Image 1 (cartoon, rainbow, N blue to C red):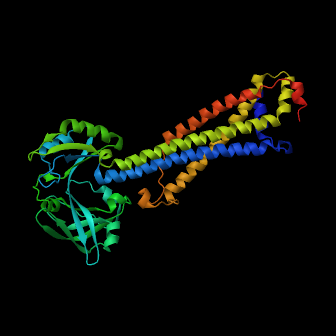
Image 2: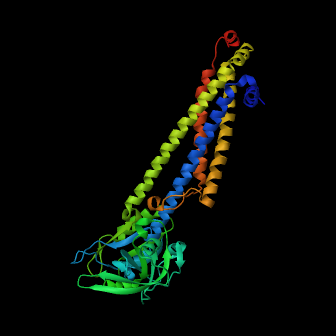
Image 3: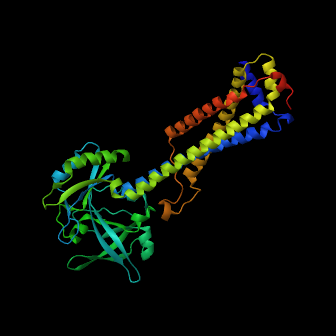
Length: 415
């Protein structure tokens, strides 16, 4: 063990009445480093959790990309997309596409004797991946929807069910207004889901694809569009761009233009909100770095002032300014290391408890989820710790030059 490290460890471990100023300063610096690191780690894990939860829900409702119609009919409504074999082959053979599913939508109104609510009916067939809705199903069961027959089964959200005072097994009338008449259908409530994504929960219902096609007067190969799923969210934009080069502005059998849109383009406001969270995290990290740097410098200066006689004795014995600087660098590294260890333990413990027990609740109408989400990302965890360590090292290296004391005779007599 070198002389500088030995002296630094003695300074760090010594607890005596003479250290009436430095001990509180060391504890404050230690606490500041620990809190700063813990806040940074928790903030990043929470934002990643928000992004994952909200993104998964939005993708669950609309997939990663969609092929939609760009043309209007004579009544000002969007024309259907002809989802024939050639289109589906062009989609499924595109690199990166894992699954393609046809859907059809129409607007309607659910009505009971006492209540009514406007809804968007989404028709799906056998090829539609319903795992997302099964995950959030809170009552009943998910029917086997079909593109060839109508079961008159309906899956709606908890929000709609509560507003209409409906439960599984109840029957409800739905009314649909077309250009020439009003159509009525009677559905049986098969299941109730709850995602807390209010923008979709308040309107979205699921039923058979054939039912919606009949209500829209569409043929068997006409749909509202094709939803496209890829391996991961980050690949969605790239796959959408690739599809757009092959499909955009092509004309189908009924003369309608087709276009490809990523989920970011379909609901941009939600992803803009998530991007704002990234900026908030950057601001938090910068503030915590500044606070941590200030506590390190202030703690180091207070220890130096209390140990100024020791510095004078060391200089009198032949120690150089470099030796003194190295002593206090070792001391600072010990302080930062312990603070980082405590901060990491506290952050991981808080995140683990929140992830498994959901202690901190949220208003789902505002935040789209009912509890603060956590996603552990060890790469970001490592980068945060490396960043804190590098910045702390720069601060320690710079502040150590304040230890270059001249005149050992004067410093020995200093009180």
